[in-house]
Image (cartoon, rainbow, N blue to C red; front, side, top):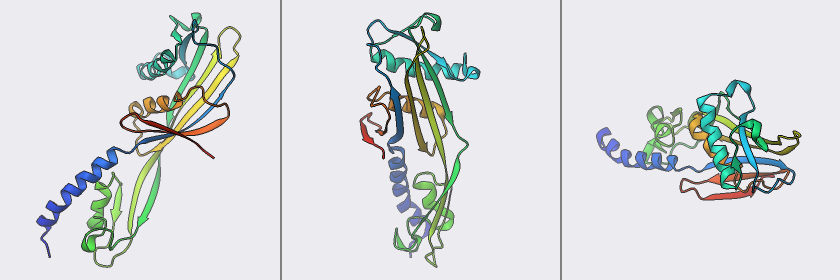
Length: 223
């Protein structure tokens, strides 16, 4: 039987490979959009404002608002000097919830090497390496199931576009994602990117946007 030191030497490259594969997980968001015919971009100005007055003037909000402005600028719209002079007001909001626990059970023996199965024995080594599971346990002798617990978070952004002159609503859209991160600086730019993929989209349709690390995107309808 190999020593624990030998086992650790064998396990480390596998652990690193699993960790790298976890980091490469694509970002997925469900996007719903409703729109009336939008004015042609040429000559149209916009200003991004906070839907929640408590966010107005904050540095964090300004950072995310710049991501929204960049998307609209790329579409051909022009950023106004102030909301009072803009043709369109872009009302923006973002959020992430407090998280909820998810439990996953996998078979034990036969999934990995020897009695450890999926590297999950001895307090869940496999759980920690295989993508950051919060807890794992597998009886290495009885071959019991490998139970892993981790926290998932739901995040989202909302964008509403109104014509400033008469207040007519031109566009409503939201993007939501379920992930194991609650870090808004990482989540919000991806959500904004997803929301503006194929903008303005088909009114009333919900699509799933998948964004890979190489920025390649795929779009499919959600039933």
